[in-house]
Structure formats: structure tokens, C-alpha cells
Length: 358
Image 1 (cartoon, rainbow, N blue to C red):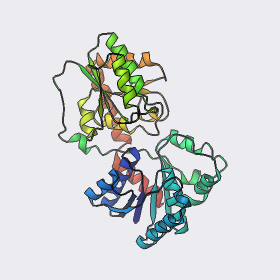
Image 2 (cartoon, rainbow, N blue to C red; image 1 turned 120 degrees about the vertical axis):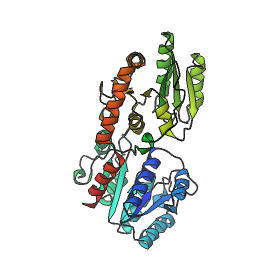
Image 3 (cartoon, rainbow, N blue to C red; image 1 turned 90 degrees about the vertical axis):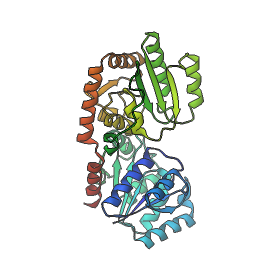
Image 4 (cartoon, rainbow, N blue to C red; image 1 turned 60 degrees about the vertical axis):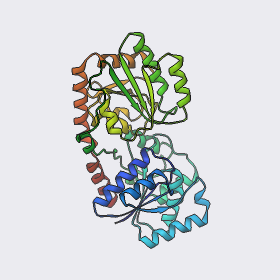
């Protein structure tokens, strides 16, 4: 097939990573693949490195009202005989989806990654009912919230939950382990520094652990708007030696293999991809029992699920893992097995390909 992935965001996040990985796998499967993206964005640069074809365009919230951009898209679809379009972001969905409908593209797929309700307006209803041929939420929680405002629209025949998968080969190669002779436990968190990710809860947990004289280091990987606020909380609670904001981490597999326990403090997740990355590195996970987390973490088997916002219980479960190496290894190994059963990228790509072609 001639396949186009549409992702014109200017930064690198989970959605961009997913599109890039799917595009690579579709190339391996023999499809002719393009990615529509903003020129010189991180996704554009990665495509160039891997020699994946790009179509350079920027689509803002009102791009669907711009006839010139719609015409550019239509002309591209027709020129390259695009048969399948895969879209994730709302602005991209509106413009690229409408253009695809006009160009009579056979398959128009929405990869839904946000576990929040879609606005119930005329345009969205039209897109969901008349434009999209397939809707692929990344979790049951995402499916539930996506359909919340569309109960009267018949979508069940074209919607299927397909979890994100991970390519574990990078975790099975020789990766960089740091500080193997440490006399303290390393706790890890990775994600954007935003309100959704809830890293302020991690500061509270670190405060509790320090008050009990537990030796640990908490590493928080990621960038975001709350960096200054979090740094101030660290200083305010005198945790400069225990908590470190690492900023952007390029090789997440190296980060995951260097920690002992992964902590997810997010208030909600469409699909906690970082949990799966921690499971790939055989790390136990402690997370809040919210949104899609229970679909990934098996409580007391691969980690712990904590009722939100019980910080004391969260800290207690972390302390249990810190004090019990055998338990850490057991839960970490169980997590790796669960990943291999449910979250292998090649398996999920096959499931996705079968859904959109049958």
C-alpha cells in the first residue's frame, strides 16, 4: 500500500514516537511510506536519518479552513496514490481527514492516544461518522472516553483497541548501566514536566522516604513548563541530594536499565508507554490506579497500583520494594513476561494491519 502518516507537531513526544516506529515497521513490511510533518521538526529529522519519505506541511487548529492547504494535501494524495492515512492529532485530523475524504482515500485511520472526551460538536460528529473508516484507541480507557460524547453515532463496527507495542531488542543488547556498585536505590520517572504527569507527588514521596532515613536517589527525566516549580519544591524540601531533574534523556533504554524501581505519578494516561519501557528493562512499577494504568500494571504481580491520591501508601509500597531485592526481581521479571505476552511491537503492528485491511 501507499501509506501516509500525518503528524505535524513541532516537538517529540509519545505520538511522534509511535508514528515513527509504525512507519519503520510498515517500510519493513514492504509498504511505500510517507510521513507528513513540519520541516526540521524532530520527527522530520528522524525520517531523514532513516530515509523515510516526507511531505512537509504545518497544520494548525484552523488549517481545515485554509483552502490552499487542503488543496496541497489533496494533490499530494492523488499524486502518490495514497491508500491509507494514519492520523493522531486533532488539528491534523480535521485538515488531513477532510482532504482525504475529498480525495477519496480508501482508509482514513484515527490513532487515538488521549484518554479524554472528544468535544461533541458538529465538525467532530461529521468526521467520526462520515470521514473516519477506522478508529484505534490505545487502551480501553481511551476507547471509553472517546465514545463518551458519541453514544448516538454508530462507531462500534470501526473501532478497535490496539495497545502500543515496544521493540525490546534495544533492551536485550549491551546497554549502559551506571553506578552498579551504589549503596542506595535509584528510583526513576520519565515524562513531560506537566500537571498531568504529577511529578509534585514524587517530591512528597521523596520527602517521606528521607524522613525515614532511607538511602535513595530519585531521577526525573523530561522537560516541561513545571521545571522551575519542581526545582523550587526540591530546594524547599531540602532534597537536592536525593532528587535530580535530568532534563531530556535521549536513550530511554539506558535510563530504564540504570534504575531499580519505576514510579509513575501521572493523574491520567491514555497509555502509559513509559510503564512498558520500564517493564522491558525488568523494573517493578508503582503507579496510581487510574485511567489505563490497570491495563498495563498487574497489581502485586508486576508492581503496585495505588489509589489516588494516597501518597503515604505510595511511599510505603516504594519502601517495601527498596527493602526487598528479591521482590524487585520477581515483579520485574513478571513485568517482562507480561510485556512479551501483550506489548510486543511486531505483534501489535500485525494486529493493526489486519484490522485496517479486513
